[in-house]
Each structure stands twice: as structure tokens, then as C-alpha cells.
Length: 189
Image 1 (cartoon, rainbow, N blue to C red):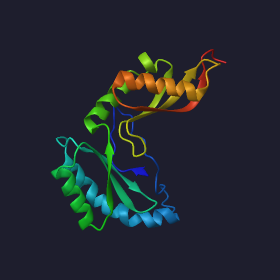
Image 2: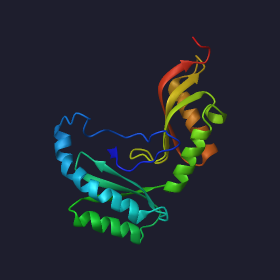
Image 3: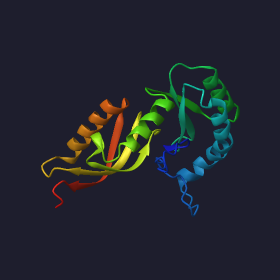
Image 4: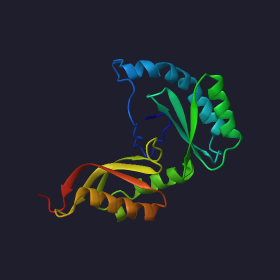
């Protein structure tokens, strides 16, 4: 999946799940199959943003599924008129759009993402250098935080990440997925 709809928090870009085409437009078999969906999504994406707007409590985001050319509508709460209009418009454009229920609404995820970014280097993130915060992710129902984990030499990285995820979820009120791109020992060596 790749994230079609994203959020920018204090200059930190939302992580894209994958890039279907590189800047040089090298086309792969998946990219060729995805191209028509991308063209339809280029038209549909702004319309969804305008239709859902900030007042929609249900809309979280939407993501393309390159494997089958469909689009997944990330939704929080019961179906409503906005969801029906989005699904109808996608169907009219010849798209297959599925609804994936999410535990958190977009406003709650964005608040948590801003709070996590604001806590960088402090509190539960005192031992973690944050590179990116993604409040909306196609692959995770919660906030994804990417960075470097500073840990004690005897700590197993997976266990340290799990402890950080648990503490962050308790502090920020949403599920948190910590993705450490590097581990640094706490003793500096």
C-alpha cells in the first residue's frame, strides 16, 4: 500500500508507505497496473478532501492498493453521508474502494502526532531521536514514529521498542508504532 492522503506536522513529512513510481518514472509491472488508478485518484483526491473536510468525524485517509488497483478508505466510526458520497463517486469513476474501520479519528491522530513531535527528546521519548511522525498510515492504526533508539547494552531492541510503544500509547492516548532505523548503545560505545 502507499499512503495517498497525508499530513505535515511542524515541517516533518508524513511517511509514504511506498513510492509506486520513482522520480525517473521507471515503470514496473505494478506501476503500470497502478497508473490508471493513480490518474483517477489525482482527480478524486482533492474532491475527497473537500467533501470530507475538517468537519467529517469519520474520514481518516485513503490508500491505494497496488496489488489489485483498488483504494482503501480509512474510516473511523459509523458510515455516514460523507462516506456514502465518497464510495459513490469512486464507483462512478470505475474504482473499487473498500472501507477499513479505524480505532482513531483523524483529529485525534493529528493531535497525538503533534504532541509526540513536541515531546521529542523528553518524557517517554527521552531516549529516542525522532526523525518522522506519521499520524495517518495505511499499514498501522495509530501514529508511526521513526527514529533512533538509544538503549542499554543489555536491552534487546525489539523489547526496547515494545516498551516505548506501550509507554507512548499510555501517554498520548493512541496506538504508537516505533520504527527504529538505528540503535545506539546508551553508554556511547
